[in-house]
Length: 279
Ligand code: KIV
Image (cartoon, rainbow, N blue to C red; front, side, top):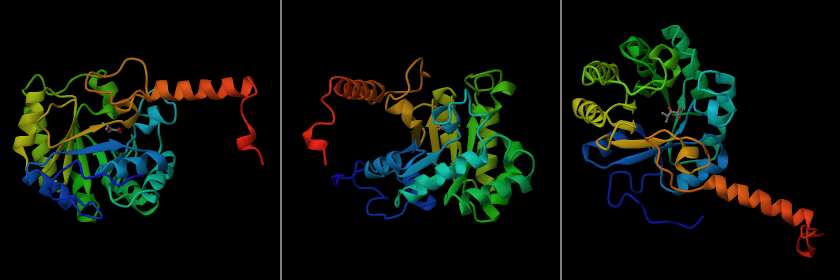
């Protein structure tokens, strides 16, 4: 792929060969926004690295974007680890975060620690993400004190969709007070960043202003320090009804559909393989 000039202009991560959590902290301190994308395989990981994306998340969204499940709940640690390994093997510069799937860390601090260690040792991840509120503070403290960087996911937490009564904007009733408290507690526990999902933009702003660590928004307004999207949403591979917070930057669904149809037509018409492709 051709060398592209940095999209970030002059900033703390130019010329950094490996993004680390302190670089993201510096970005916040210097008011420089950044981007995170999900990735689950070698080609997208390499493309996103070439696009200067500093952070890749191997999300539990692989559940309903790779494995064909309906929600993020069914995916297992054993299913996710090979995807994490694929992404870490195919990239050098981005910080790779592994998502801890439902049921693999909520049980106890010890369970959380063992799961996170598997993602670090077997997957090669450099950080993990977990969902929840202040009840997850002991888990975060244990990981951080063991040398594992943690991104805490607050607001709408898809793993708790049944408890939350479906896909609903969070933090509306109390102007986000509870979320702000959770954000501060996670910061105190040592989380290096917060992911904030589906809250009113003013709540995203209030949380971002309430903590020193970077916030990564998805449906949380423009004041967050960074933004994340699931790559299949961002690039238009997924079709059907999309969440309001998604902006599509390409129509990969159409592109692939047309390519597959053109291939079929060529074969059916006897135009492929041609002399050029013969041995
Ligand atoms: O797993 C995931 O894709 C997420 C999104 C909110 C980015 O956590």
